[in-house]
Structures are given as C-alpha cells and as structure tokens.
Length: 357
Image 1 (cartoon, helix red, strand yellow):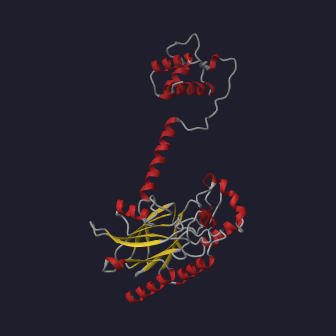
Image 2 (image 1 turned 180 degrees about the vertical axis):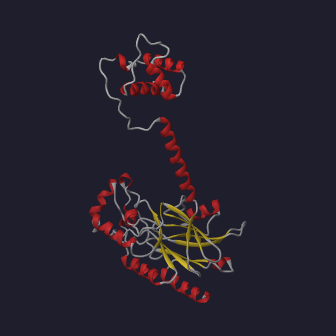
Image 3 (image 1 turned 90 degrees about the vertical axis):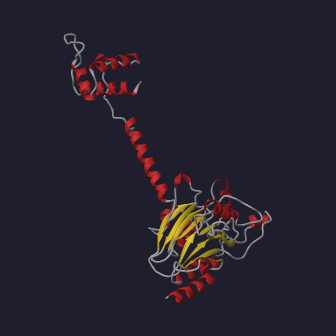
C-alpha cells in the first residue's frame, strides 16, 4: 500500500476509534463527517481523501464502520519513514564529524621542554613467551623518567577466538588471568595512546573490554591513529601510528612505513608493530627535503614456537621504539630522534631536558 494511502487509512482507524461518527445515508457523500475530520487532520483536499479511500479499498482495505468487529489501533514500534530518514541523516552527519575529528587527533602536552613517547610493540601479556622482565623494566623506566610517556601499538593479549581457541590449551595463562594481566598493563603507566591490534579486536558482538579496563580519558583507537603532538612552545609533531600498514617486502622491513610516507608526506614518524620484528630509519626526501622517521617495534613476544615452525629467526631487541622530541630544536635533524632501547632513550631525554633547562 502506498505510504500516503497508508497514512489516510491510519487516520481513519484512529478517528473511528476516537468516536468520530461514520458516514450515514442522510449525509452528503462528498462531505461525510469522518472524511472531513481526516481531511483536517492530514491537511489535504476532499478529493484527495476520496481518491485515497478508493485506492485503499482497491488494495483490500475494509472501512472501519463496515466491519463486523473492531480491533484497537496499536502504535507501531518502528519509526515512520520520514523519521527514519531524518534519523539516518543525523547518524551519517555524526559519523562524518567523528571521522573528520580522527584525521589528525590533537594530543596536547602541557609541560615545556623535550619529551619522549615510547611506542611499545605487541605485549601479548598472556603468552608463554612474553618477556615480562623487559616489559617491566621498560615500564619502570618510563614511569621514573620526567617527560617520558607510553603508547601501545596493539595486541595486549593473545585473546584466542574461533578456530584459534584451541591454543588456550597450549598457554599456561587462563582466559580470566589474561584479562587480569591486561588490566594490570593498562593501569601500569599513564598511556597517552592505545592502538588496538587484530588480537584486541577479535571480540564478539562489538564487546571491547579494553575500553572498560583502560584509565578514563585515555585516547584509544582501532588499528591506527594519526595524532598531532601539540607543545606549549615550538613546533608540533605528527605521528602516524598503526598496528600495521599495508605493504610488504622481504628485503625491507620498513617497506610499509616508507610506502605510507612517500604517498602522504604528512607525518614526522610512521610507526607500527604486528610482525614481531623491529627496524628503524631516518630519511630526507630528496625532492621536498622533508625529514621523517619510519619504525617498526618488535614487541615483547619471544620464544615463538609458531615462528620457529615457519623457519623465522628471532630478534632480541627493539621491543619498543622511543621517539624523543625537542620542539624548540633549531635543526630538523635533532627535532626528532628515535631509539630502539627505552633506557638509552631515557638517558638522552634527561640530557636534552637538562641542556634546555
């Protein structure tokens, strides 16, 4: 039934239920009382009312006063078409605004002087091979160093699901203990950024315990985040952090980051994790003279039996990549310096802050 015809049918049902009298033989058939009431309610012409009644009857509609019994008119649980269109329009506009806000997310730092952000690679805290000794050392260094902050590149835990659920039997940490360790990790330091990786996003029905377990106010993003570090003085910095970036080369572990850098030339640092290898490089584009870093953090998962079976080697360093920013540096080379060792980065940061004090 046509939407306009259905609108009239609904009006006739409601009016009759409200006690508006039905047309009688003594009334002028062109001006029956219930039809007049429907005309006024809908704001349409008399001829339109009659035409839509005829269409409704052609579709099998029986006029309420011609039925042998009357059922109540129940309110529909669904929105009308007009309300639904308005709703999805507002929803789209909100999603578009949210998307625009995430193109470059401002991350404001309030203290002056050089600072550092340590991008921790995949922790996999519940894995038998998680290097807890190094993870705790790095977190301790970050917490004890003035001006040093932590960011996560994703995969806080194994979080096995689907066909991989069988792997729970091969790890010593239970599912309950896994989330207990994730909670400890999310509260072990003041995270300025949490990027969620594929293991974090393996969750049914959009459930997301990380959002519940993190400290309120912590910036978190699925898979990638483009952040602009804003400082009280000096030049701001842009960091494109992702669990991983598209592109692969067996000869160049930073192929994906270099590809992103060449195509966009938007950031000072392009960094990811995911592949459990590390590499670090600084470039100057020969055409634009833009200086940038590309990096991949190995993460804390070691003694990987799956990697052993596939014949992959095992790196021993680069669990986290630390970026040290000097917003007021005169040279673009010294504006940003990256380290594959958190403790070495902390020493450099302390020297820089003492020099700038």
